Picture (cartoon, rainbow, N blue to C red):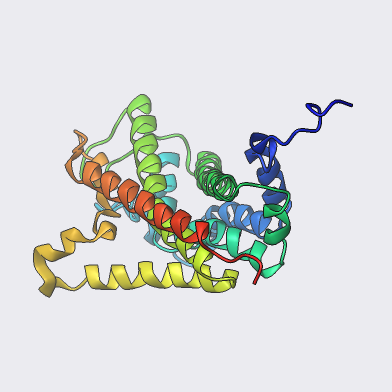
Length: 282
């Protein structure tokens, strides 16, 4: 065997594929996927078996009131339910647990001694965390749509803002809403990743990220702050409703996407700089 055959290649260490397989084998990943499947099933069961199932879909001009109108409406309602808390926790878990867990298990020092370059280590962690978050979101959407298709029929999307759409437009609007919510999850994901670098306690990193998002939402709900709330990245979390009108209004969604991407980039950048100087042997 020549020296070239055994030479060190940083690009061959801790690839995204290897890290993805490692994370898929973890129990918390399976739990996240199960929750994404369970939520639509639980809601459908509640609607069909509840004492007054019609009250959930009474045709009022609100998204929840139209949930039983068809698979597109039901899926959007599940996204409404999940985006406020469940998906936030899942994004925080996949990004907040990833580095801190390696530190708590004392495996990070061995990975970096392999040697895995520090920034490559973080790169694999971030990419895999985002992939798993996106997969969970898509599982929720797919499960909700399929279940509602069998239970509520195949009627196209009825907008809570008035009017209805054809099938092609219904798919388009559902895609826009799903993509926007996925991008908004970058905010809790970025916070959680920074916390994961700053602490060796996985639960602390996840909990801190969720708590910060909750505090931002509470501040955003204070009417006395007026237009100052527009400076909060979480203020644009519900801007996807603008995709449900007869014409898509992009203004607030564009701002929301910009805030989410910039916030995530800044937080990850801080995390990388902090991790470059972190003593992983202590």
